Length: 557
Image 1 (cartoon, rainbow, N blue to C red):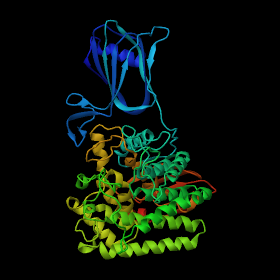
Image 2: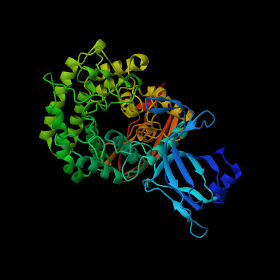
Image 3: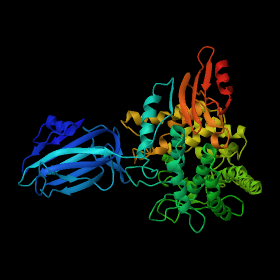
Image 4: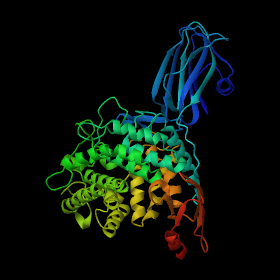
């Protein structure tokens, strides 16, 4: 759809230029304003070819969607991204002044040195005395050559649209590095990249960009052991907990590819991270305050963009009084994943040493951070609670599974009383729900993506608080959820030498798909309708462990 705001040319003439490269002439002393819809979020090199038009001013504004008047903090308010009647475009701009040397044989061309991100382009042209002829306005898409081989579907018809925007989101956040978002800072953040890498593994079993990412972060290690939370980056940028996600990346690579040389190369970096957290424990044994609010100290302790923490820049407000429990739990998770890697590499004594440290921190968390009815607090002795802490207490087994289920269920039943996991933390919420047999609750939390579709997004939004970015690949969760959980295809040990197929039906009636692994394609199909059904096929040389326990529960209902 093209919106003509101001023009002496017809809409048909503009569309003939855009679709068929039919030339369009703008007379002298004329102002033209056109808004072009690319149809989806795009990363591309824009190309404009013109003839004559000496001194014409050309302005290209790139926007993710139509926005409303007013701001949430410094970012414009967003509603339906397609609402060109009540909204306006806001974004970044290119300005070009026509030299006027272009002719029919050799047009004058403008193309930026770096790609632009856009869903919409607002083109403004103001000519001087000489008419301007536009002979071409188009773009060349750019991105990492992601080859998607995994395909999955299920009984819920809305999942296809969510899958489509999720796949597009991942593609738009992959170039020469993974990116948090292509529209704003285009930085490779460790927390974002960890899940983006997992989604890539599940879709394509391609680890080329992942290996580069892991090595990028190794090279960012500071004198104190922490990594820059984003890298490559020209400035120091530290979120202490993000260094732990690098350890998760190493663990994931081990499970999918088992490259021992890669793991050994990265062990000193991992140990430096874990030593930093060990040195920064309080006398009580938990991790002391490591950072604070964004822009108000050396380090930022970001956890999630959730409304309850909007005023504290994505950090539990407990940080205003001291340590936050999430940083202790992340340290425990880092020790546990690090121990698993070391044990696999044959370093059993060091692995046991890390597990002993993890147990000591867990004991301190239970002693100093347990509040009402066994719920874990956001900070030691602080009567504030969030879903996030309950999630990571389950994932790290800091509390027993029965208590963990009870705590998490309380955050599900009374969401108004607890900070809820948003897009950034949805992956970890879903893993905790899966672990304590509450996976059916994912249907409620998946409505978040349906709301994105209702707002006209073609990619996954960063969050629901300020909705700053319309394309953030930590939200491409369905790319993992359908193949790895609903169909249940996951590595049963390092290097995918064996696979476990353990479908989780949740609230679905049936699902099927082809899941590409480093060892080949696996096809899975199941149904809980009638007497139920389950089948799978895989490579002859692969050991396959089929676990139908969760399906059997549904069959018996």
